[in-house]
Length: 222
Image (cartoon, rainbow, N blue to C red; front, side):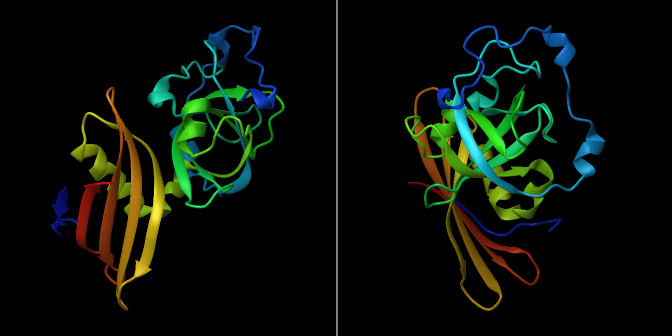
C-alpha cells in the first residue's frame, strides 16, 4: 500500500462495421491526419450516445493501429469533430458504477453520427460490458473537458508512476463525499494490466475545497 501526504510545492460486429472484407479502397497515406494543436482550444461538450464494438482491422483511416494504447482504441464518424489520435473518455451509462475508459481515435467510419463510437472489443469489455450485449449507452467526452476531473486524472498519473510495469485501462468512481464543510473525499478504482495479470488499485484523495490543496492521498490494491 502506498500512502502520500501533502507536499505540493506549486500547489462489434453488431454495428455492421465494415471491417469484414477490404474496408477501404483508398491508400492509407491519403487519410493520415493528426490533430492540430489549435483544435484543442475549441471547448467541446460531453455528448450522450451509443457504443458498439469491433475487433478492428489491419487498415485504418488514421494510420494508427487498433493495437495502440493496449487496444484502448475506437473509431468515430467521418464527419465527427473528433480527430485522429485524439483521446476520448467514454463512460458506460448502461450500468451503475460510472465505469470509464480512455480511448484513442484510430479510425473513421462513413455514416456514423457524432454521438456514436465503435470501440475495440477490449475497450468495450473494460467498460464492464459483455460483447454479447452488442451496444451500450455511453457518454463521450473529448480531451479538453478532461481538465474538469482534476483529482481523477491526478490519481491516474500517480497510479501509473507507482505501477510502472502496468498500464491504466479504465477508472471507476467509488465515492465523492463531503467529509466536512471544507473537505472533500474522492475515491476511484483503476483497472491495471501487465503482461502477467490484471489488478485493481483504489486511489483516495482528501482535499480542501476552499484552497484546492490536497490533505492526504492513499493507494491500495483491492
